Length: 447
Image (tube, rainbow, N blue to C red; front, side, top):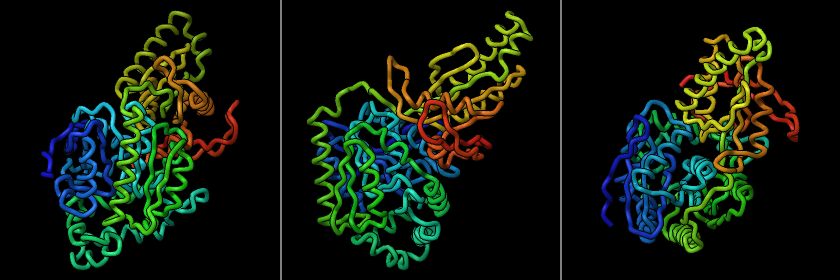
């Protein structure tokens, strides 16, 4: 197979390189792990074989993440939310309404988040050597300790040292063709980008998203993968209906018979989903969404002070200011009750920045707001969202101090790499919601 033509999709002010290969009856899009290079990938072990196998039975869409490969260089590393925008931009440019998402290693967290947030565009989900969280935690003991993670990063940086030393260092990991793979990774990103990626990955935690994924899901993980297989088991147990295939003896980058087994499993799974109608248009019953609630502090006293006409005019200015910010940050206004607003977003970082911008904009009218956000699985009813996640969002807002934007732990976990800062507000009991909830105030909404 010849190397496909490289095209570009515009995502905001960044150009994302992508390719389309094969003419199968359904679309598959690969979310690369670590770093990638669209044109070189076809010439190296695993990447080339895997792409050719996928393109033999599907219409294959490939892309380089921004900052890597043939996509535009960027300062720093974009958060998962921005990467989801890039993926949607590529799908639109490739005229793909719905695709199976195949997430490799570091691409797994974004793939998980995409499947939960955009179920109408996700026919199926496949993860290879992936993880929902990188770092150790008391409730996730398979993650890397800070020391082990530092060692892994230092090992990655050896790619950019003497070539012969890099080849020797990575021969155990790659198994087959280490020289070509070392050259491939050296040309896919700079040392600074690899370091920035490492820092961002240390913050990622999408475990809260796993139970909200409602698309057919397959995980394939090598028994000898340096990414602990326990993380794959943890993930599969928490995604409804997910299936895990453990490849005995396989490494992180499968080759030879291991690669054949991996490709066989993926092809069998995707053809089965297609035969069952997985690519047909379907209305999503649930989606992952971030809900925002705001209300004016001291509204009754303000209304008495201004009188009916003055209060009505102030509310009109308040409403107009909030709607401007919702439009700017792609928020969806769902309800307005008196002086309160209820809106939803497809990304938590946008929702936080919108809430902060709203607070700033209404201060010119002498108003202070309480704002609360939560990300969770929402029922879709007549184009609007409902359910327990919405109730939690309202309860979080009720806990906020005047002028404060308060978020749940889930929101905080999903905005790794966004530049947002938080101050812990401790655990709170939310009225009518079981358990304790850790809440955080937004301290820094820098872009």
